[in-house]
Image (tube, rainbow, N blue to C red; front, top):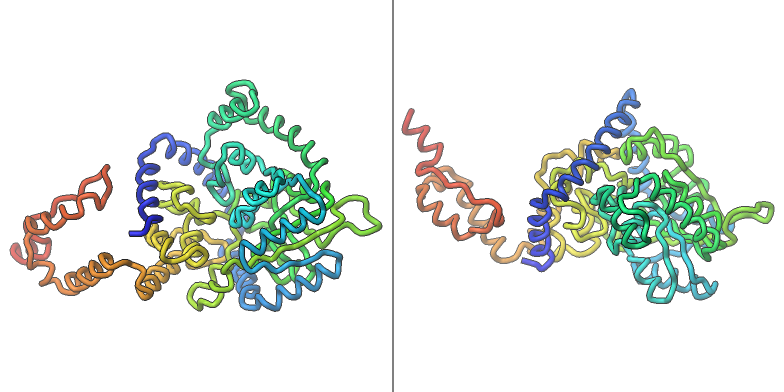
Amino acid sequence: MSEQKKIFLRKSEEIAFDLKHRATIKFNMSKYDAAVDKGMKRYSNLDLAKTRASYVKTLAINNLHNYLLQFEKNITANGASVIWAEDTNQAIEAVKQIMIENNSKTVVKSKSMTTEEIELNHHLEEIGVESLETDLGEYIVQLAGEKPYHIVTPCMHKSRQDIAKLFTEKFNTPEGSEPEYLTGWVRQKLRKKFTTADVGITGANFLVADVGGICLTENEGNALMSVSFPKIHIVIAGIEKVIPRMEDLGLMWPILAAHGTGQQISVYNSLITGPKKSSETDGPEKMIVILLDNKRSELYQNDDQYGALKCIRCGACLNACPIYRNIGGYTYDATYSGPIGSVITPYYKGFKEYNHLSSACSVCGKCTEVCPVKIPLHHMLLINRRDAVRAGEGGFAWNQGMKAFEYAFSKRSRLDLLGGKTKNRFALLGANAMGEKKQIPQMADQSFSKQWTTKK
């Protein structure tokens, strides 16, 4: 068993039986469920909208090379620069070089899972650059010295009391402060940072090929502030974020909002096509877009799994997943958690260390049902399991155990060779198979099949 899998199992058990944590998640998820249920009712034909969104992303992924080149051509024509980064190291080196060349010491950063993927804040600290998260949820987890718990709601694991206590410890705010007070307090603190920062760093919800634009979707206005005030704007986006046309946003923006937060559309939606022009007064003087591969191309080569690149990071599959709701985001020990994370993380970080995530699934299919771009996530998790077995990543004990399982379960007569008492003795060999909190149930002396035959 890999070390990552051991950690996963230990954390899963800890979180699943942490009643306070589960109560917090249940409460926060219930708010999401209610909002999204209302948001979905705005669609007269939700399935048709999802079919069209799936088509847009399928078209983009199937022609990824061409659309990326089109995006590069159009955005550079408007004065921006594009850097292609094969992996984390190239992306980090590119950012560091920009900082050094421009003598930049302060960064304001909007919410971006791609920058979390490359651990940007950590690397900026190494060269003496202050990087401040400006999304409220990201700001809270940064203060706590944590990583985002959820790809849309970074501090979903914290209650309002937890957050008030954190601010009191860090800033001596009044104990038990209300969320409205803390939000206003943070707004004032961050405004000074926006106006003095050297560089603003954002991700991109979409890269629009035909106009060469990057899209930012948010509810707080911090991303737009991160773009507007600093002299330099750096965008770090995965290559899969591309969509063909600007008119696709009329479909993609609302469906992202509906599945992410339940809104008809997010409060702020920006399309940025380059740095400010000579005739403009606001905006950055320089704009650099870093297009990150980081093994996405390897996933792209897999005929069975490349469709996972259609993901628009709405978080709906996480919120629907019974596993995620019980073991939480940190248990996955990966940037992308939940069903989508379980599909792509083994490709990004290695099957040997992370294939156990492919088994963190009950195959209920809820993730596939809620996906706004119709990615068959639960089916892809089964394919991950199959590919891991073919690659011999299961380990000797697992592989031999599966062969024994196949042999025994392929015929009813083989299952009935041993009585219940003998089977119970064998079961004791894996006494902790269900964890310390549960016990393996006792098997009857005779199988149901034998009992049925005898009574008949």
